[in-house]
Image (cartoon, rainbow, N blue to C red; front, side, top):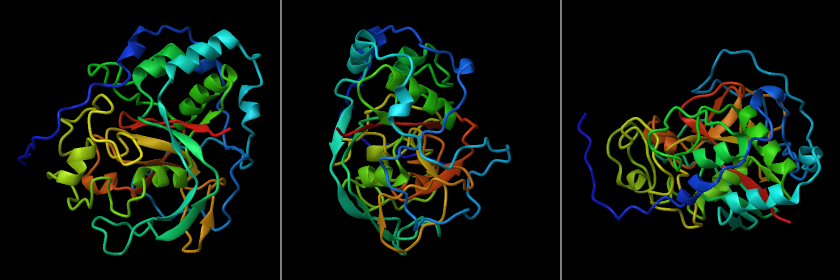
Length: 326
């Protein structure tokens, strides 16, 4: 298949290049710490979400790790060791200017019947988010992971430290978050699926931040090419973050580059109105959103939702952080 290249805006320099100079010691190795599910009790459970879910596109057969269905408070994530002011200042510097403020609001989650590439699991329904939060501008990059954890699990390292970290399980992400929260005076976590789509849409009702995605597979799509890396333009690898256009709220790489882990288990939507939805009980797997360098165009849409086993990893799955508003 011939890929058509489009001339576009001059690419923005990676916004986290300075992080290469940061050298922080790992607080704890991944092998020393048991996975602990993080589901903040500051977010009410949406009883309109049902489960278990219908079969998903990225289902895996590996047995699931037992997770508690009950929420764990944000404070429990940083009980021990004691707060270290110097370490907190280092981490604050590491993530300085990395977040944008997302205000509470109501939006339509899912897709309309006429959207190209729509899946039956994207039932359109109204969601209200009652609390504001801060969303990381880009996926967590390799420099940030290394500075916090002392390692780099990524497959694609030739692109530099500004490429998104990948090859991390859902539980690996929780270990990273737990390390941050133990040494920080703020609370980090994964976004809920509703928060993720709300931030991705940034007020838009179309399938991408640049307009409707009309391509289903790996052909050239001008809307998607402007904002993300997918199978049609990625050269089968990740790319440094923030080279494509940001959405209206200043978020980069919400479409493509790497799929992003969310807090929720994957389950069926209800068409009823929902408030602060979060699926806590086990479904087919943990939600991943946004598409990737490997994904077809239709799986990079704002409404596209897939799942993956929480203890499995892939070179096309990473994550981004939410910082709770205080």
